Image (cartoon, rainbow over all chains, first blue to last red):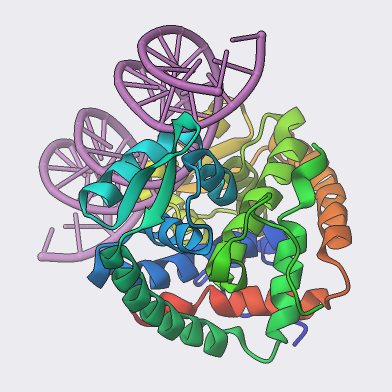
Length: 154
Length: 154
DNA sequence: TATTGTTATACTCTATAACTATA
DNA sequence: TATAGTTATAGAGTATAACAATA
């Protein structure tokens, strides 16, 4: 388990294949490609899917808060929400006492589509688990979450 | 170690924080941000740095092979190599018997800059190791490398 | 004065088709 | 006919500044 398998095709990658950043990028690209394919039948991009998930978990959510949770800049969220609303998956409701904000909720259609997408995501995640190998998944996720806070002090 | 720490700010992320893909993205963004800052004093972007590393490990490399190793499309590599050559870090030498290809090598200046960049990368990697927590790093890298081959059959 | 959503815009990455010169 | 490098271009994703409405 000491040496790495071939990642650079027929040529060597030098120290690159021992660096967390490079392997993180390769893994992320592969996993995203696989998940994008899994969600494609529902016409959901990753941002669409994750937005639906977070709105379901936090009904009456503001767009601002959704952006912070998903790390999407507010301006870039507008067209995403426009499309989800146009498709009747999300409702931009009103917030009593603050006419600047929207209260985001899933429509019944949004909930239904999300439920089906979640099943596809679960099948995807099972493939991920199989590819992961013998590592303890909880420890792996914990390590990723720790890394995601690396740059907080910069 | 069962529950996850706060990743969504003040709101919950739902099942998102248990999904490998999402955590992989957060981790990759953070680690890249940290590494980009580490390489900034040398005016090297990540693609520049990794290109120098792979050329050093494979002297007389063709541009085509470099692109395959780094998973960069050949057209997108042209301006990268143009800039590195213009800075005198890389030489596009000739291949005896094939006037279509270049034989890429580092110049002495390229080697010297790469050596200094490697020291900065090592300091970055030490920060990464510290952030990683108690996980076995070899097992972690192995899991990432396995994930990077997830979509090979698609 | 600050905040929410919006518009406009720009910059980086990535992807594809087509050209040239060589093989 | 195929390959290496190149050009041009288009599409995502992401970033900032500035505006209108509201707080």
